[in-house]
Amino acid sequence: MDIREQLKFETKGHTIYDVRNEKYKEKEKDGIGFRVSPVPFKLTKSQKEEMLYIGKAICNYMDACIELYNSNQDVKEVLDRGKPKKYINNEVPNYLFLRPDLILTQSGFSICEIETSPFGLGLAEVLTRTYGNAGFDPIITQNSLKNYIQSKTEKEGTIAYSDNVKSFKGQLDFLAEEIFSGNENIWKSQNVSHDSVNNGEIYRAFYLSDAYKDKNIERFLQQPHNSIPSSTPQFEEKALMAFIWDKRYMNFFESQLGKTEFELLRKSIPKTWILGEEKYVDGGLPEGKENSMDICTLGKSKRQFVLKSSGFNVHSSWSEGVVFLHKMGGAVAREKMQLAMNDSNHLYIMQEFRHGKIVPMTYIDESGQQEVTMNARIRVTPYFSYQPDNRGELIAAKVTGCENTEYIHASTASINTAIIEDER
Image (tube, rainbow, N blue to C red; front, side, top):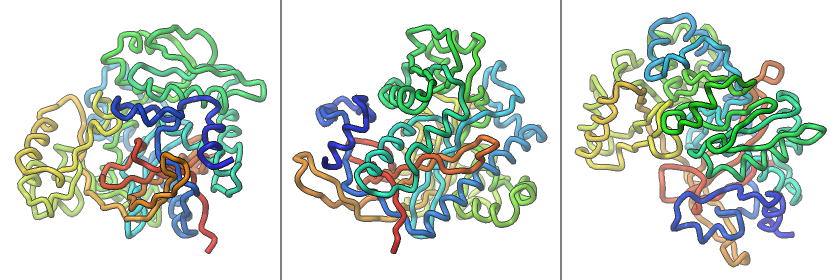
């Protein structure tokens, strides 16, 4: 069985990647919808170790951010911005995992996001099974994700999703049937925008901000449920990455993390700040600028920054809230920046852009006969446990490679594959 047939077999009939753009639907006939590599992606031993160190550091960093939120009024006010009163709470966050998205650069990994949502988790598991059963040795051992999930969830439940994320239905169906279920566990996936949910534990596979535009989600959230993850949107903000660059809190984080983890995260997280908080950025803004709008007046070569919607915003998912300021003219950059600065109901961040390293990757063409090589930028997507007994353990991982774009994500033009360690 060739790798593409193995991949189709492992999907168990589910469409793991649903092409969102209608003009590319034709390429999805076999249910795959992306470019398939004949081999997993190789990480060197040092790259693998760096990834694992980052995972443990990110979990400790999240712990520190939670403590800072609960003890510092300035941080609380920032992270509560734009949230309805019903979401403002001191609930202990309960996430199954943290997912730092890592861009492979010439100098190591760069963290572009810290996610808690399950989108992509099903794909990561399918890729691990596919290449593992094809004779490779992925860094994730078979059944490790399933064993972990089942040890942290109830025996019966529902993965609940919204219309806004229905393109991930195939992955969520797969997770419910193949990962959450089994060993006498019975889970299903369900669109709560259309149906009621009345049994067992709930896994929330939608954004809390979906309630803004979906009354059924709003109604669902008002009902009593035994659910995970917790309704703590203050910790589902990209703005968390800014705090380690805020000179008010540097001593706190170095004390909480220790010098080694603090320096690792300062190396891995590009300089990041929250719009309106520029005066607190350690080392200041580039070229001595005092605010984010001034950066838009710089030439493109010095305007290497990304404007991002931080979270709890209908434009925060996928690429909708990401603006590469160096890829557009100054007038357009200023217009985008002004829109963000005028929006007092949501958080936005600026983040230094780091160029991804170009790495040759191969994929199997549509005929299934020829291997094609492309020069790709790489995003490594590891999922680390955020549960007490397994804190920081790697439970799933995948690689995405894209060419001719700065935004590295799953698409019809991307390669998605598992990861092995290079034994050389």
